[in-house]
Amino acid sequence: MLIETVKIQNREIFNIEYHDKRLNLSRLNLFGISSTIDLNSYINPPNDNKLYRCRVLYEREIINIEYIPYSPKIQQNFIVVESDIEYNYKYSNRDKLNLLKDRYSDYDDIIISQNGLLKDTTIANIAFWDNGVWITPKTPLLYGTIRSKMIDEGSLIPQDIYSRDVDNFSGFAIMNAMIGFKVIKNPSIRRVDENRYI
Image 1 (cartoon, rainbow, N blue to C red):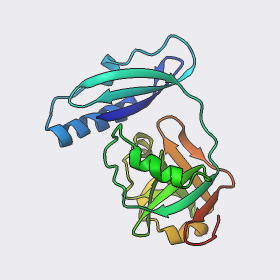
Image 2: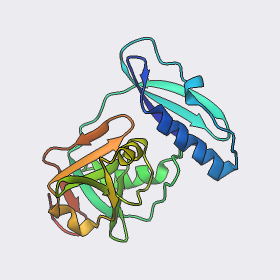
Image 3: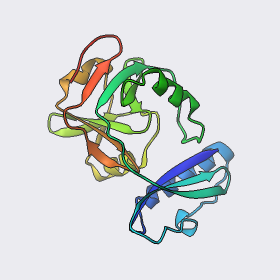
């Protein structure tokens, strides 16, 4: 099964067109279904001003929708780890990602690297400030909705980013549907093979 995680606050549904696009592309690629689903027809925001994580569970069709109150977690300390994990689609089963995170539980999150190329954290796409522009890995683990929107708007540039270069950048950000684009002030990013920080 797959999921979409949609931000809702003050009854407003955020970035819905990009969630629709990813959901319907996943249904087409995995199940061969070309008919489309409009999530606006299924999501009924709670009648208050709280921040919610709307969790849409689906396969060929929508299976279930939950509205879960959300509080962002502080993320400051990261470690870069080589892993062959694949997460091309937003599956509900995150066991491999969770096991990797548990292995490095002293850190707030892991930045996954594959063959020396940075990908994502376990919950977010990433970006680095480089010579006046924000860059993001060209081939992430998951093509996130905020990432896609920012690339379309021209405020984020996809390119290969090597783990060996993390100490060469002057800024770091994470992004996902719930936190938007969040710049991490004074992050600690360690590589698992050596004690190097930015």
